Amino acid sequence: MHRQIRALIDAGHEVTYVAPFTYFNVTPVMGLAAVDVAYHASPGRARAALRRGVRDADLLIVHDHRLLRALPHRRPPVVWDVRERVTPRQLARAERRHRLIGPSVVPEATLVSAGPPPPGDTRVVHIGRLSAECGVTELIGLAERLVPYGIRMDLIGAAAPGVRPLLRDAQRVGLLDWFGYVPNRHALRMAEGALAGLALSGESVRTPPTKIMDYMGRGLPVITTPPGASMVEGAGCGVVVPLDVDAVLNAVLDLKEDAARRAELGARGHAAARLRHHWPDHAAAFVGQAETWAGIGAHALAV
Image (cartoon, rainbow, N blue to C red):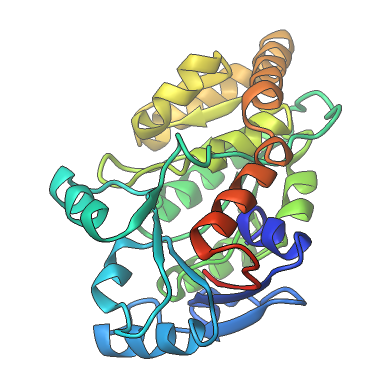
């Protein structure tokens, strides 16, 4: 919403966004036509939502491979933005029928700040969707362990219904601050000056590269689990640990005690993000590709 859709709107296109707004307690931004759909919608309900979304559209961009099985029969050209773990068979099957967007076409990217403040030593931050699969239990456990060390945890992002009571309870007793959904630009500013950015997930869950890039773009050291290791190790901007509260706690405390290392990791990440992952450097290419697929003169895109 804050990169691809914003780029399309800024280029003068009308965009309809089909997404589970109610499930994540998110209000669509102004200027965006929204179609709400259940997060675990049946194929029939998903198809009905997509049918509403593609009405008068010139292009349909899909971000969830499950929706490829629920495409309406009457539809514009379909593009699958492949940002999740899929099997070679799924990829080959989709490639025969649809156009594909991958990192080679539209790189993962973020909004890199010009000069972020150096990392501090009093809080850690997590930006992004909160769910059981994305380590909410571990985050709450970590927050409790950090209290005696004077480190608070900021959670910025919409949460799945099943974990909202856990987050509210943890906030009520002072273990953490959960801000809920915050527009991306504001969320990134809120993260600035933290001790570290957390990107924790199990082996079966793909750590979104944009989450790590968000931290890099704000000059934060990154603490991630193995699914995010390649990006962090490649940029030399953080620490890779197992999905274990003790391991993450030790990584946080090590960084708290070493201001020079925090600053070095944050600076490396920021430099790498500015060189390779600054979204405005890629936005025009994305818009141009979408317009080519939709046909010259495209004016309405469904995402």
